[in-house]
Length: 344
Image (tube, rainbow, N blue to C red):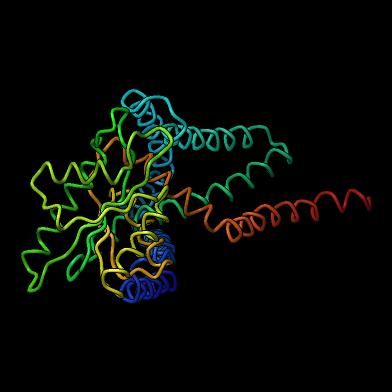
């Protein structure tokens, strides 16, 4: 009963973290750890359950653990093909296909290593599994908590609504991905405005001019909203930013000029919401992030891209952990095989 109790304790710490600061990445790690310990505790309980039913359930659980990675790999490869067909062949659109291929490479490596009975190949397979397992744990934790964050983030009581840019089409018009953000931002603003007792909130559209764009994103975003009945008097434009961090930093400067210490609701795409929230927290912005829905086929690649950015943000910690995961089995193999051979 130790493992289920530990899972429950970690889950309570996770809940406390969400209440204290829902934008912290540590919440994702705690959630992933609680789920992993919970699954391990369930397996232990099934193993100790007498009778055929418990053993069948345990076998089903183990088969699911074996089959799920293969199923996910198939899904990601197929999703990558869909992304290329619908969004063109670009590096960012290959992420889901590459992730699926990586799963198959690790599975294939395990199969070959098990049959070859070669020490070096087995060591390489062990190292690959440990590193891949660590990255997969963080990815699953991130995806699960990003979903949870979308449920717990509150948008009430804001003085500003900030809509983050997402790139314009070749014709300088607002593409569907950005349109969904603007529509969601308009919806949030209207809700806040109905409940306001004073002048009502202001809406900031944030996005600079890319090298391949005719006008700043904020200009096109403002035109999109005004064409759909939004009052220009409630619009502010941030036209200098080139990425999410600058979107938020420059928008914060505008807010501070109008009303220091104001609260805001930040609007972006759903797969981008949690990372945007993490950046907002780091910049000291008071407010949460809400996500606009995107096409289902787009979400896996988008989420993988967001996770990669977070993983690289904490590159030093992740590199250190991966080094330990590589060093421990290599060191063990050296002590067991190399050192005795030298003294033999």
